[in-house]
Amino acid sequence: MDIKDTLTAAIEEAAKKAIADGVFPEGELASVELSVPPKKEFGDFATNFAMQSARVFHQNPRKIAEELASRIQGDWLDHTQIAGPGFLNFYLKGDVLYDSFRKIFEAGASFGQLPKKDAPKIQVEYVSANPTGPLHVGHGRGAAAGSALVNLLRAAGYPVQSEYYINDAGNQMNILAQSVNARYLELLGKEVEFPENGYHGEDIKVTAQRIIDKDGDKYLSMSEEERLEVFKDLAYHEKLAILKEDLEKFNVTFDKWFSERTLHPEAVKKAVTILQDNGNIYEKEGALWLKSTAYGDDKDRVVIRDNGVPTYLAADIAYHHNKYERGFDRLINIWGADHHGYVCRVKAAMEALGHDPEKLTVLLLQMVALYRNGELVKMSKRTGQSVTLNELIEEVGTDAARYFFLMRSLDSQLDFDLDLAKKKSNDNPVYYIQYAHARICSIFRQAEETGLSLGKEPKLNLLTDESEVALIKKIEEYPEVVERAARDYAPQQIARYSYELAALFHSFYNKCRIMGVGEDLGEARLALVTVTAQVIRHSLGILGVSAPEHM
Image (cartoon, rainbow, N blue to C red; front, side):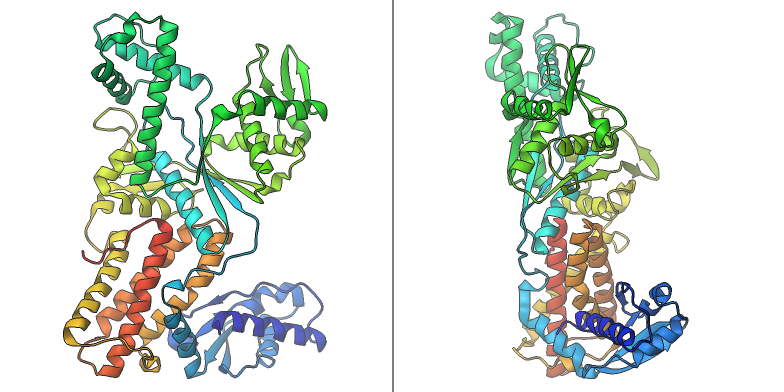
């Protein structure tokens, strides 16, 4: 029995009975929200349902609570209590908590992994940075958020495909080739004017030097046009390989890498033709314009320039049309906040193509500000450019970087404290959580040394200390947290839960001994920490953070 599901159903049933009895008027029921009171004397669970229902039932919340309490029944319930302005506190019978926890214990490593849902596949597209240079810290936040969201949705039972859209067509690739060419010529002692809009990063020099190390000056004999084509291809594959390597180091992989090049020219032409045929594109001043204002955009947008070259929007229209045609039921894009104006035009294009724009959700990622010694870090010490993801990983590690990126919701700016992320103390939240897991692993080793083992049926009803009960209740919340976080696209809820669980474990550890307290109680507490470790591992796994056994 899931206690919270049972209690929720009982509250809803009591409200329906009161409506049938004529005590409450007909109306849509408020959602039932249950919480664990801060102190045991306030009950095992509490709800503000009566207060949330006051507008619907047009009655005093305490009166509503009284009517509900008189109609809530169950062999799992000891008694209810009305508190404050209308809170309902529930006191469960002693064996209910332990019966529920026993099922969790018996579930083992499968606990927290929700049943597979019979639902069409979701696609999550994220990062999708141009393959023209290294990933920076902002890309890192998107990478952590996207991969954690994919993990979270899968834990909640949804079928998911992750995708990286490689922007490998268009002018940025020409600029990449021109930048590498200029550095190549410079390194070979030639005088050259660097492209005005070229890429100035140190990585461009590294790419040019690698070309020289491998092939020397053999490309000097080529025409510039030929050389640019060669360098475009060489630089593209090198940048993409490094990008994949950095992401894998950051615990990020993709099911599919989708090349923009594959959209040109046929897919782009196909999408534009559909829009022309259904009257959603018109010609003006030699260019083709999308009637995006007809679908909520603030102005119409050019899709084919007057020189016949498609705009970036044209490729994005073709790409998203391709996504819909692949049969995804939900499309989730994670974009930088600077793309907020782009959302409306892409959705407008999808509606113009006959797709449901509500199936497309764009999550906007706010900026990351790095701080060291209390001061804002703007540039890389190594290159004088933006701090790269790889540099961040080198300084604080993958685990700390991922957890810190995931502590806050995507739509809030993140202040990243580099000094805190490196601390080996309980002030550092990811260290605090990982230390809880390492501590439990140490308990297992001590138990083995002292001969304490875990049987199949530990006497869980011996876990009566307030710290033990609080830990059990927190563990029992986990599937609900996973379901809710997946529904809200909010991996930060898992980050917060894992921290709160670790805090409750540390409180239990400081209060309750496991060895030397008698075999039955020791075995019950060993069962409790076993499940705690499993849930910590599972929650950190969603976040893409490791659960070390030694620290």
